[in-house]
Image (cartoon, rainbow, N blue to C red; front, side, top):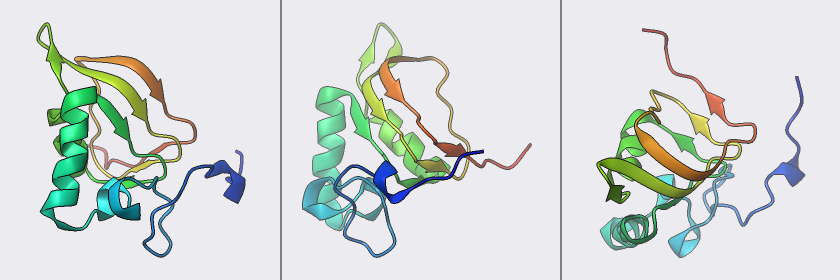
Length: 116
């Protein structure tokens, strides 16, 4: 097993104390976005680009589904152009089947779903 070092988080981090999530609009990660406008801007970017950046973010199943539902659908499949999940922590079901992932990174991501 390896240990995660501070330098592993090589992106501008969320302004919320003790959160290492990648900064998006307003200096916060997708989990901590304030207000409907900031959240709407990020979701609109996903609609347009198919890019999702959740590096260092703690995600529950609802947030994962919200993000995936915003991705473009091409030939009946969800298309994610760039999925950046380095050091993300998935705290529920995270289903990536039936998707086209063009570029995905899961370096040291943790999946902690309860067994069913």
